[in-house]
Image (cartoon, rainbow, N blue to C red; front, top):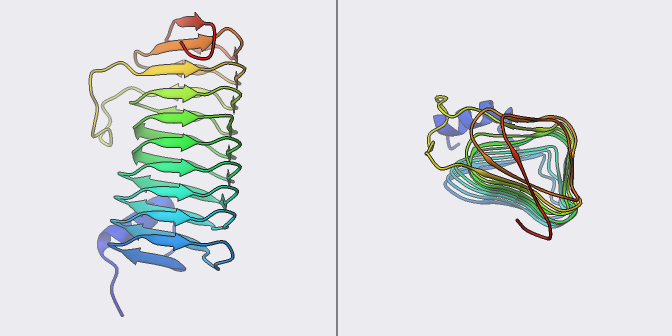
Length: 215
């Protein structure tokens, strides 16, 4: 029986994933609709959850995660990789990327927190119930999106902040969006807010209003 390397064990511990169901090393994992995969995990590979498929937890180290249209998961987590949620997909809990982009397509829904350290975050007509937290990278809360729990930009410099840089992140709160809770910026950002958006209190940044689809 092949032994899993220590890195896979560490990844499983970080994201709380038992080593069972669809798991591999140095390769991708594909979960199709109807496939009985309680968890999907890999190291040095991607996790692809097909349209309308259902998984409990999806995790990878050095790879991306794609949740297909109308697919469902309990939580998603990656180190060094992007996460994409397709249209009308749903994650009951948290979505976490350490170094990687996170994007939510039209109708995507996250029941927990959306957070990363380094990488762009983009929402388009999407919903996040547990707030957004990040350190570096731009954030776009696109038109028609709804964020509960506020937005937090932490200070750079923690031990896990491997890709800290001196550029100033841009935060765009788009037309007809709603951000409930405090927008707390513990570092410098450029905060641009549509004149049709509704936001909570702002700490640590100056709001720059814009009209139209984009600043």
